[in-house]
Picture 1: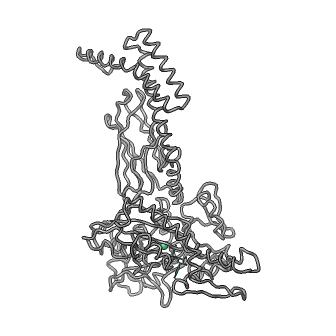
Picture 2: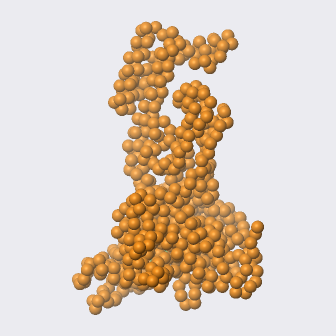
Picture 3: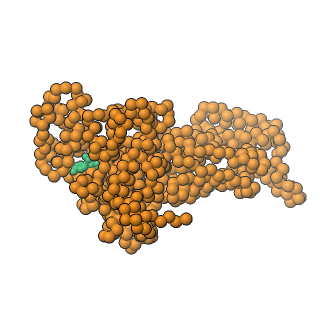
Length: 616
Ligand code: ADP
Ligand code: MG
């Protein structure tokens, strides 16, 4: 039944409950709506304050907690009780964090392979709990500004977020009392905020460059007839404005002789460095004092020390472009997202790379939330005909003979997506078939991640190779994968829904891509070996069958010759030498092929006499 919302301050009925757009950022979060009168997206803010709510939580002594600006001041004075960058922990295990655990000033707990928790005094918080605290604060602030309840939202996530992390974000919303109607990608939201895709006739290719506080994302999208497609994504989950701040801190440390504990000094200089960085976005020199010592940095010095950091983002751009299959000149627009793109050198280098002026007319801090508000408005039924499509970050496939990965949906497939392939049995009378679903880019499944496995059982007894098992993959718009296996001759079928994989992180995605590139040559060689072995083993099995039954009436000499060739092939298998295996397979094949032909002849003549060919 449809619900009607009531404005709690005016008591009037609201036909369309407001759905807000939320940018739940690593560093800053904010809420935006479509203004009821101007119909334009606006970020919500209290009078005279910023729309940005720092994604920081401080846990006080008496169990009280504050979120946002008020919490931010405790980053230096009470780091053990002040949680920042909780978004980075979403859906991650301690192992996933690797060396980065050191960058958290608070206690991140290794929960023996399961998802990380944060410990504050004697209490434990999951990243979902922490994100929900931020969302709750955003909800409260929004309700205060709008003077109405806010219970529905669209929340944005990085394009790199996997299903698990998206699900974790949804859970956080639910915990905060929000009905999360849709999770959308940040670059898609940003494109919407630029108004791309609103005009139905428009065909455009857009690069979205998003440099935030601690993460970097580059995405290539196309819009055609109002439909958005993400062609490719790339980025670095540990690269952002914080690195620019640290570069300034290190610069100051190298230029001055500060007294006191080095780590403490660094911590104290961090906020000043951020101030300097922001100041240098519009000025040529920054000066300040630290414990009565004068510190300064010029724009030129700043640009020199951050150049290598920006350079890294440019390589990611090159990779994303390569994955999209497009040439630079095919990119129509390059849009700037994230507070760090206010640094002039960033815009300059990105313009330089793409060979065109970047688009920076929409406030880069707010652009994602504004786009989320537009998406919310679409969901509220106020704007029609816009459809958002996403892509799979990694390839999805099945394990086949010899542990090989058989890809059904290649990485960067557009969601929703569907693919199917037929498989058969390799043993006579085989009644079951293991369907193991993997995600990843490597040739051997052991190097990829297993998502699910089940056994299709009850296949009626048939000779090897006769059953036809069709396995289909379907990813719906929510990113849930349904794997179905059906034996076409008998009609038996089984399906499984792959639950969001909490354990796969965006870093894993990057690592898997990198691994697959680094191991490409080795993998190809290994695949060739496995394929040769599989073929050899199958040939050995069939030949064995001929010999045992001796249905073709082989002579003693033929038998001897065959068994020698079989032994040679077996030996080559033990030696794991691909070329030798192929040669020996070929030799055995040459010997046994005439027998097979003889069987065919016998079978045909028998069937002409009305006998069944299915006997053997
Ligand atoms: P996130 O998406 O990670 O939450 P934001 O998009 O809010 O982050 O970006 C925050 C980063 O932007 C911080 O590192 C902040 O210092 C930086 N930033 C904000 N304003 C400026 C500015 N004027 N010049 C340079 N960097 C800025
Ligand atoms: Mg952001």
